[in-house]
Each structure stands twice: as structure tokens, then as C-alpha cells.
Length: 228
Image (cartoon, rainbow, N blue to C red; front, side, top):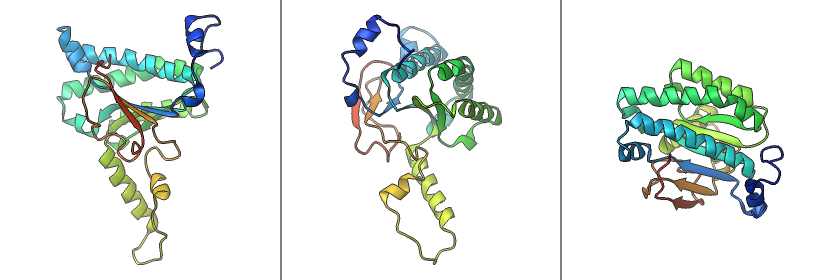
């Protein structure tokens, strides 16, 4: 965390009280409540999504300062494609805006950017820009920041099974049995530690098809706080 906090600042004093050995290695967050946040203020939904982007910035940078290994944010589910086209376009536009504005910050904080989900369902332009962001930060060794886009936990498991079948070739040939460790290597999060902590904002008591395999042993914390 050297260089990320000011000497003698209140943040440094706060961090001095933390037992870093007990911090989660991997924090996953279901970001929920943008629409309600906007509605409570008589604002359009897009205002809630834009405020949500500012919260993403704060959470990513704080996670890096705390020395977390992995942060995974649920940004856009496979079900979200059913939303009105205008809202989907707005969300994708905000994503592109975030990446363009924050890439230098990710670099300066040694954060590696990664995307998990069915990326083939994204537009060619967005896929290209996401790939450029991942390649630009690939060598960073600090926080690994996963953003889940066009993501579904069931879809991830189905995709993993199909990849296993493709790798195994023709049926009838001798094959080693699949166990949990070998199956995990086919998930979008292969090589990453499973989440220790799953946080959901907005008070909803459901996991919404998020990291179904990976959160088997995670502690789940639900807060009434809306995401922005």
C-alpha cells in the first residue's frame, strides 16, 4: 500500500488498527439499488447508474489500499439484457466512460483489470475496449479487479461443462474423473481464490445467480444501504 495513502492522515491511522491477516482475500459485491436511489431523489434511473460508477471508483481504490487480492463486482447480468434498450445502452456507455477515465488510476494503483462473463454477447466496440484495458493492466501485481459483465452463475457452470467436453474429445476414450479442483479450472475465475465475503447492497436477501460455485463457503453480508 506504500504510496497509496498520505503519511499521518486519518486513513493511515485507521489502517494501523486493522489486522490485515484477517482481511478477506477475495471480496465479491452485488451492486444493487441504483434505481431506487434515483427514484428516492426524483431523478431518472441513469442518474442512479452514474452515481453507482462513482461508488465503484471508491470501492476499487479502497480495496487496493487495504491490500485485498481480488475484488469482483457484479455489473451486468445475463438477465439484464431484457431491460429496455435505452437503459442497456446507458449502462454500456457508463462502463466505457469508466474505463477511459480510470485506466490511468488503475495503473498508478497497480490494479489488474479483468472481465468475467459471456463477453461474446457484448458489442465488438466494447469487447475491444475491455480487451485493451485488460492487456494494459495485465502486468500489474496488486488488486485483481474483476467486473462481471453479461454474467450468470448458471451460464458459467454450463460454459465450464462445455469446455470440459470439448477438451475431452471423442466419447469412449479413457478419461480421468472430474473433481472440484479440475472443474474449477474451467470457470471464469480459474486460478483465483474463491470469495471469502459476499456483500449485497439494498437489503435484498438473494444471490441473483452470482458466483454460484465460488461462494459455497463465503460469508454473506446484506446491507440496507443502496449501492450509490
